[in-house]
Image 1 (tube, rainbow, N blue to C red):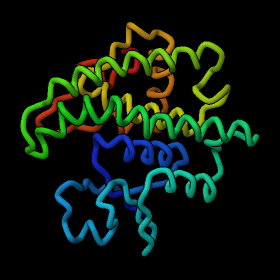
Image 2 (image 1 turned 90 degrees about the horizontal axis):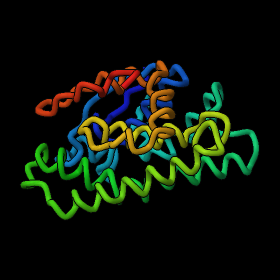
Image 3 (image 1 turned 60 degrees about the vertical axis):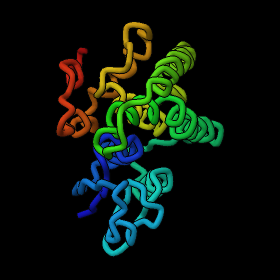
Length: 221
């Protein structure tokens, strides 16, 4: 049995959880309050970040590297395209969401609305919330543009890029900060991906003090 040290509203943890579930790899989840930087957790990952995947005696941090490892060791179903160009595009979009989207949107909206409270670092910063709300409109527009010519974000097959994007959006959707009606094609894409069996544990997440919105686990919104 594998063990994944994670935090429920960490998009990087969610991305790995989705890959594990899609590939039908059984894993035991262990919630980690990583910001407390306990000596035990820092021994698992000196960077003090989640997720960390434990396989036997091996500890594997860094979500991108974990996903690549799982793709190589469990190639079916494939989550990277067959061509070099397709793999490039999928990896490019993973980097887009895990870097640009995270810093411009997720860290500002989820960071201010959730992590300020759970970490005890004060009240939400209205400037960050305003910046995140503005930035998500741009990103939803970019996703809409991609989906105008593709069935999925990186092409006509579902890839790790879709899981990376869905991991971030699902965190933001948990706090009702996605205006789905402003991006119908993105809403349709998200409905497809969240209806997959791999998404069930994500939709079952419950964070104490932050009840799910009514639509969160509704596959039909």
